[in-house]
Image 1 (cartoon, rainbow, N blue to C red):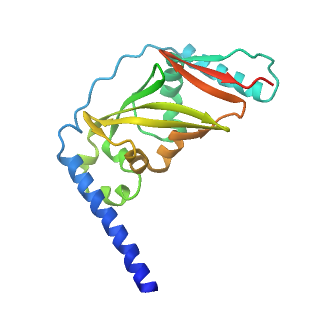
Image 2: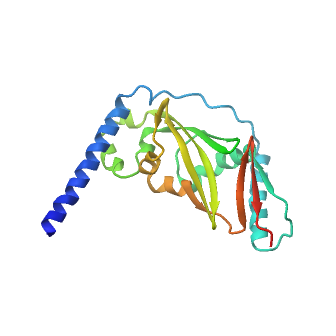
Image 3: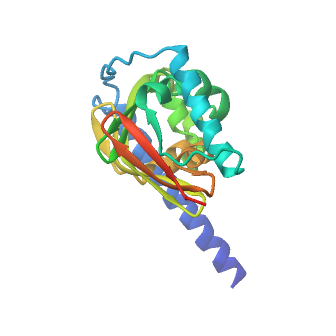
Length: 212
């Protein structure tokens, strides 16, 4: 019984490895993947980044019942992009640079540039990527992800609906496999329990909090 279980386990690993090899081979041969679309221009300043930090601080003050304000907190995409430009690489070590976040009505759209090797951090791609030539893994790729933000019980989640590498559309479920643990932390995160919802409008996000 034990021997059969081991054989079954190795068989599953072999199948996963085969799928990864086919996928990596497709990436290496696809011309669509390695097309790098231009990013939309974003104008922001250091002051935009400071305003974002101030609004995060206000949320924490309300969570601690230090601030008596009850109005919704509005974050512009300029403010978010200014903050991410400086802090994202430091905090999550996600090598997507430059990165641009756009607020569309009801959705968030993330676009950026990265090297292929940073997209192969998850299992089983991380085991096999080392056998690809550096000329392939260091190639620049454009990445685009769009989806919705959900907040429930102190947890925020980005639900991806569209995922594109270069000009090749892929299934959003591949994201967790490709980015590995760092990607999972970006797709799900803790939010203060007082945050009720995040409403995405054109160019801005409106954060509403529970009234105590």
